[in-house]
Image (tube, rainbow, N blue to C red; front, top):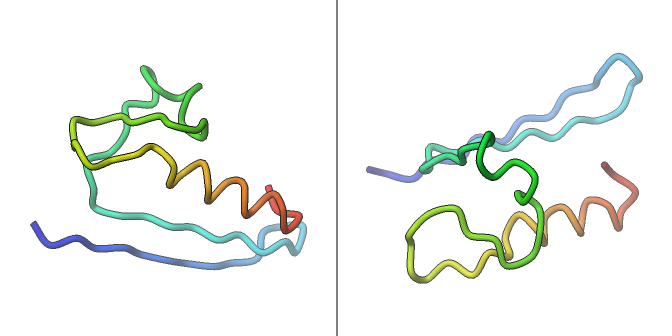
Length: 68
C-alpha cells in the first residue's frame, strides 16, 4: 500500500486556525489506547522500528507555540 498524508486547514467558529492531518496508516484503537495516545514511548502496533515519539513530539510542539 502506498502511504498517503492529507493536510487541511480551516477557521473554526471562533476564528481559530484548525490544522488537520490524516493518513492511511494502520489506525489506533481509541477504546483501548485513547488515554495513552500522546504520551512518550507509546507504540500501538507491532512495527519493530517504532519509537513512540511522533505523536508526543507533535503535541509538544503545538502546545509550545500556544496551540491546543
